[in-house]
Image (cartoon, rainbow, N blue to C red; front, side, top):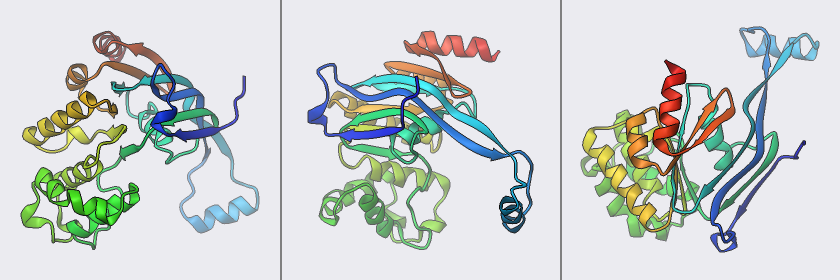
Length: 261
């Protein structure tokens, strides 16, 4: 059955009794990829106008249906190119699905890429307010949590330095601190816990556990399988855009490891 593309965000008050905070119904994301390598944009445009560019279709997600419950820490595993980040992007409304329907309930805080939304020439302080605005918060909202953000990120000596001088770990700490400064009903995290030292990773874990205890839903992608097994209530395994298995962390990770080996 073909379902037209639709992405819906509702308020948390509209959530059904079963409290599925995220629902994917037959979701597919399809790209058109040139069949041959073209060296320059000029050459591509000439060939395109002459209708000499061939394309093939590639499905990053293929007919995925999934429900994620209120208060869950839900993990996604799979090889590179399996469709994990694409799934997070369609849930975050960064991408629109080609087919299918996505419904989310409540405010989403997406942390999809290190430094996403940061301007390299602005200071850490200025980027806190810029990133907060991109997440939908007012300056007054950010004023209230600014000191806590800087403290959590451990960037007090560097907060007025340009972001371009930050290491990848500093990017990660500041990005996570801003995205989680306010309570999110849905927190979406892509590989952020693989960056930074062990102490910072523990702080991230503790904060997400605190959010879960308050009823937040956490959706996380990571290659750190042991950490996912400890953190998650359920895990989904994606392979070439298809949903292979959803279930208890130990069950899914064991099946994934056996397939990989």
